[in-house]
Length: 154
Picture: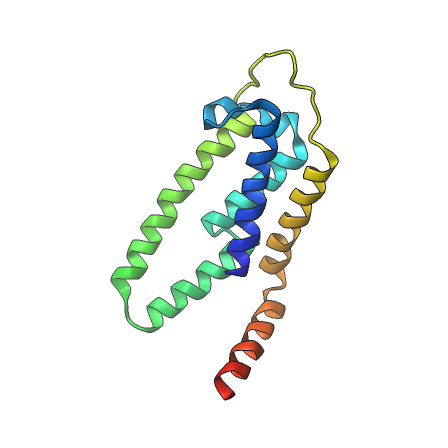
């Protein structure tokens, strides 16, 4: 939950920041945003990788634990459905990355507007835990284990 919390907050903050600048809400209308706004583009890519479950992001750790628990309990059909869903999500998220990085920006004369500093700091601040929890996931697992054990004991 913590992994998806930061991932979704960061991704939606990128979309909200860009929407506030351009009023675009369709993926195809976001052509070239990754090149025009590199901080937002890199953070969005990290979040999309995390939502797909690719390492070294927090989403990978979350999916790993979910799949491990499902397989351990013998729910192989559910694990298969989850794997298919992961592959499908990869195709969907690459569509967003394709628009951000591989399509030319739409020429409207005002592409050089900057993201407000507040948005940039917020986006980076929400994306860093996605990477940190993907690399140093043991810290979060330890905190969660202690929290759950204190609830179960009392």
